[in-house]
Amino acid sequence: MKKRIPYILFSFLLLCGQAFAQTTGKESILLHLHDGQKWAFPMGETDSITFPTLSDSQAGWLYGNQVHKEVLVRTYYVSSATNNWYYSLENPQVTKFLNEVTYDNNDYSISSINNYYNYYTSYKKDQPTNVGITCKENVDSVVLSERFDFQGKSLQRCIDFSGKRIVFSNLIPQKTYYYKAFLTDGTVSQSHFHTYGNLRMIRADSVRNVRDIGGWRTKDGHRIAYGKIFRGGEMDGIHDTHITQQDSLVFRDLLNIGLDIDFRKAEETDSTGISPLGKDITYKHYEVVYYQPDSEGYYDAFRDVLECLRGGKAAYIHCVMGADRTGMLAYMMGAILGVPEEDLCKDFELTTFCGQPRYRNGNRMLTFNTRLAAFGGKDIQERIENMMLSKGITREEIEEFKQMMLEK
Image (cartoon, rainbow, N blue to C red):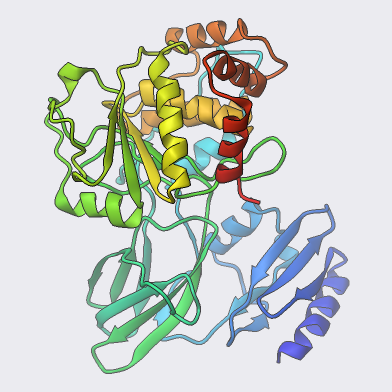
């Protein structure tokens, strides 16, 4: 069947007059679209090519990746599970905000986040959408892997299975996952699914506003790698926040957190000097001033993050809500990686979805931008780099950060 794939694809797409396809080894098919876009289409060992009717979720993924419906090819596989095959990990309001809003860097009088935050939903808007799969029979146990041969460590991202339903959470966008569901009738449902979206929010019910800084595109087309740096709210402290054991395992085991950077004031913490994630987690506490780019703690924290990444661990940066002090370091890191200014503003405003509104046209953000202007530069990346260099961060450290954070 695989030997016939190039001929089938070429014939079909040639008739459409839109694109042509070619095989790239045994793992994927690459579509070249008429507008210059490309789409890498993953193939498994037992897949075949067909042209069925699109579901809404599949169409959404394809349109989001510049693939036109009329030139669609997709994988069809035999499985005892029934699912949508493509799953967005962004909740719908987040997707609408990111896709529909365009900001002008020369006009900071406008903020659009309230149009999306105030829309009633039955789900928490600061959390991802889970992946739910329904099997033909009741489920006894589940194995999830990023490898089709299920070699290596099984991913512990199944948050629930009850009856015929399996629910996965805290997955990574733009990935293919393989699962085996061992059913109570003695059979095994084995298949795979694909995740899409860009923003990776984290489900941790006892901690607010947690998200991966990965997924953003830079102005030169790179993507910030997932799983390196996470930002969010406090895990303990005087505001009656207490991370649960279950969520602590999410941070430690799934997110691979090795560094806890705390930007809260001393009176906002519990003063133990130990991360609530455990004594083996490196804990650094810096008191920084809201929207003051010259606060030394930001630069000390940046070097701590570099050291953490060198050791193969991920960093978690937080204050109370993960909004202002945390938001400033996230903004600076995104800027030196090359994220466009309008997207940095969107990332800053995403905190609004946890119930703590933040606006790009707020007085504090406007003051921050005024202070940045003093450092010169043709764009936000150059201004932030100039500011960091003036505070003792070296050009070599900035370049090392880029090497570790940007996908090749």
